[in-house]
Length: 103
Image (tube, rainbow, N blue to C red; front, top):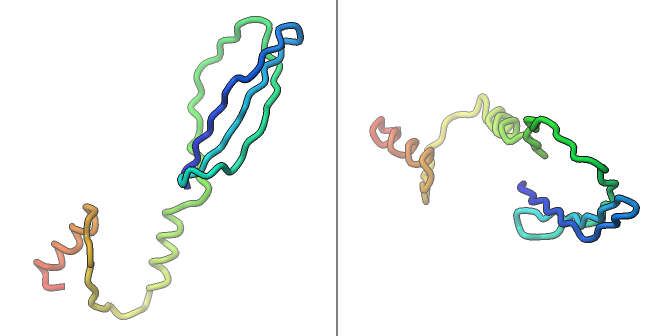
């Protein structure tokens, strides 16, 4: 899943040092999944912090899902299959290697 987060400054209250931020989260299908207003207190002087290396956020672990799928086939006999539309490098590589080995 891919999400895009957009934050837009909507209002600034100089007297109270507040900023209103319009926040939206859109998924990979362009659907709005979360929106809201964040009211933050702005610092009164410039703050400089070193850039942090933020961790990559994953909502699921695709490698774990793939391993679980492979484990479901453990102990099963091999079967012939065909790749109808091998359009990515890995599919093409498997089809080509099996063609040469007779697999």
